[in-house]
Image (tube, rainbow, N blue to C red; front, side, top):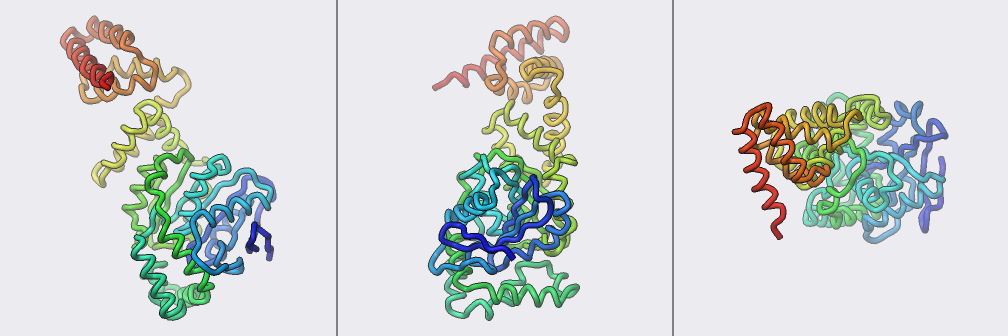
Length: 386
């Protein structure tokens, strides 16, 4: 066991795997400790310098009395990286650990390589629900509440298939330091990053168990859409997929962290899409995604924006001029209007539009060029309004 002084606290830390980069820090949920990550850590330690630690108030780390703030957890993580001599690391956090990872990435983006968020949201629950939890624990104690609370951690089948493990995790929660549990409940009660998370520009993976009722899959998928992140549903798991499906979680983390599979194409496509169409348009489109068109939106992000739009052979301005010409000639008026609005992002000028439309008039016909001029005049006039 390793114990490190970090500010006024002593934190319990476990490091495994390669001593050289890339480092990966795993952050645990409330009411647990670093051991919930053991199955994933064993899978990843051959490829990463894996760092697990008990959050303040949990496991063998110090559990000061009183209410904690999200900023306290962020400060602890910053101090831990300093104590370990790490300038940058990837973070993977579940539930409370995921909220801490989000807050840390917002406060110190230069210290984060990549971000993996498991069964977490910018705001989990409501202030009222966490205050009620605080009052329940103060009145009855964690041992009395643990059997009911643990039902939120795992899928229904887990209790029948692994009764000994279910009993063990119930004991883990029941024996969690009550002062630390209450302190972190207060941090979750007051934590709300919903107004900030869309500003985060880091490669991000969002995972969620299909049976999670605390941070439901639809909410986690919406978070991924908002962040331009990849989303993966973990079948047969609930709130702690790294316990129920450690192999699958480890595989997805390895692929994401090493860029060995398609997530990079999606991330690249989303980055290019934002550069060309603008954050406002992409954010609006992401908010409007439903189950009907979610796969289609992923497809065009990977196939179009992560494909030809991301190739180095043509600069974005030239590629945009070609796109405008094709949309004019076909014609595709809705898409043409969208791309005319985006010209401010690619350096295409009104003079460029004039030349494109004239060229199209010669080879595709005057009527489509005439309509393109009408659309462009309207869009450019609206864009110049105060």
